Image (cartoon, rainbow, N blue to C red; front, side):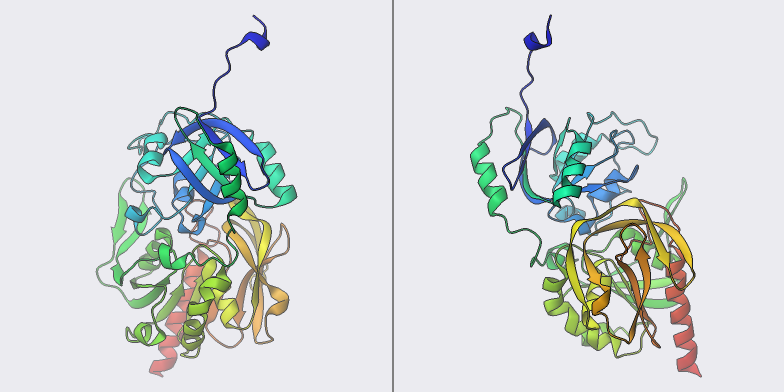
Length: 395
C-alpha cells in the first residue's frame, strides 16, 4: 500500500498565526479557542509549573523538548496563587503525543489537567520549525483552536489572529494578582514531606502581587518571613501601614509600561522609605521604570531554564530560569543605578541596584520552579539587607 493511499487523519487543532500561516495538529486539553502570543520554552522539565506561571498570561507556549506528560500532573506543582482563576498560559504546543503519566507524584494525566484548567493545546507539530520561525520573525500573535470534530472556520480564525493587538500596551497584572490582601505561610518543598510552614517568623515582608509565583513566596517564608501579599493596585500608605522589614515586587504578565501607569508612583514612594526592596521579572522592570529607565519589547524573549547570566557583583556566571518578553534598556538607567546582571546569550539587562540604597532587582527567576537553583543566593542577599537595615535602625 503506497503512502498516497494511506488514510489521512483530520486535524482536530489549529494554530493560526497573524500572517495567515495555519499549522495543523491533534487537539488535546480544552476545546475552544484562545488568542495569544506564541513563544518557545527550552526547559526539559517542569511543564506544569511553566503553564501555571502567571507571567505567561495571554501566551501560547511551544515546548521545544519533544516528550511532555510523562510525570503527569498534581496539585503541588501549580505556581499561580489563585488556581480557580487559571491565570497562566492560554495554550500549549507539543511535538509528540502527550505521554501517559509514570511518576509516583502524579495525580492524573496532563490531558485531563489541561481540560480542567481550560488550556487549549495541540500535539504533532514540528516544534523545531516553529521555534526557528519565532527566532527569525519574532513572537507572532495567533489563535489556537481545538475542536474534536475537526470543523473550523479558518478564515474567521485568521481574522481574529490578525486583528489582535498583542501584548504591547496591555496591563495584565490586575487580573493576575490576588484580589485581596492575604498572609502567606507555606514554606519550601521537602522531599517526601511536601511544603512546610513557619509559625514564628522573624521578619515581615510585603509582597506586591503583579502575578506572583508561589515558590518565590515559599522561599521568603523559608527565610523566616511573614509574607503579606497585597494586590497590584495597593497604595504606598497601605503597604507602609504593615511596617514591613522588606518590600517585594513580584513577577507578572503584560507590558510593564502599561502596569507602570499605577505601579510606578507607588514604587517611587516606597523607594524613598529606605526599606529594603527586591524585584523579580515584571517587578524588576517596574522598578527600572520607577527609577527613570525604559523598557522595550523583545524579538523572541527569554523562556527556559538554561540561560547563562553573569552577576557583576560576584563575577560568577549562573544558569537561570527565565520567562519574559520585555526587557530593561540599560542605556536608559540613570547614574544612580548600577547594572548588576546581564544575559550571556544576548547581552540584555538582567539586574540592577540603586547605589547606596538597599534596593535591587533581577530579570530572571531565582526561585526556579522549574529550573536550576544557582540564584537562590539572591534571597539571602535580600534578607541580609533586611538584617543590616534593622541593625542600623536600632543603633
